[in-house]
Length: 192
View 1 (cartoon, rainbow, N blue to C red):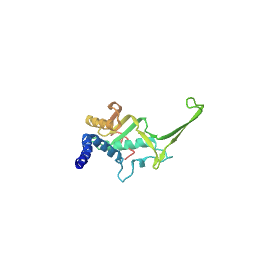
View 2 (view 1 turned 90 degrees about the vertical axis):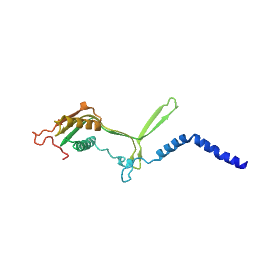
View 3 (view 1 turned 45 degrees about the vertical axis):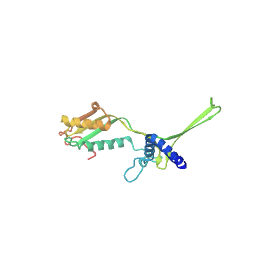
View 4 (view 1 turned 120 degrees about the horizontal axis):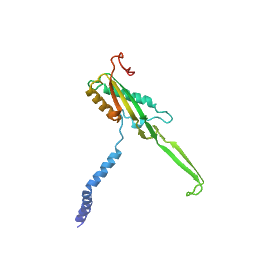
């Protein structure tokens, strides 16, 4: 009988595990995903290392816009038939970093009807600089693309689709025009 009791004691938890095996599998998978390290850049640096340090100013919006324009020029020039390209983007609103805030509220008098109160808010900074809770990307108003292949309907369509995919603009807010050969090289391209 002792052997049967021991066997019964071992099989009862196994029956419960068998009954709830999918629930336990989902819980284990969730725990594994939570323990999974965040995305890391090659070289082992953490994603927070690219954030500005406390007290430092973020780069100006125009510099970021110029970088975006140069990157778009580089990628658009790789489309068949485009040739030389110059891009100009206009912004509806610039990008913004939302920083973590430590807010405290002090009041005097009864809780229901305080006599006076004071709210203080401080920016939270960690070991790698300020703590960013949200990054709002810029909203674009329009795009102008001047390219050598802008006279071809097929090239214009490809450029409009590419710019729309990169910026989120609708086709009605993207103008693609041909590079003028009469102006001695066309639009000057400061990136080249």
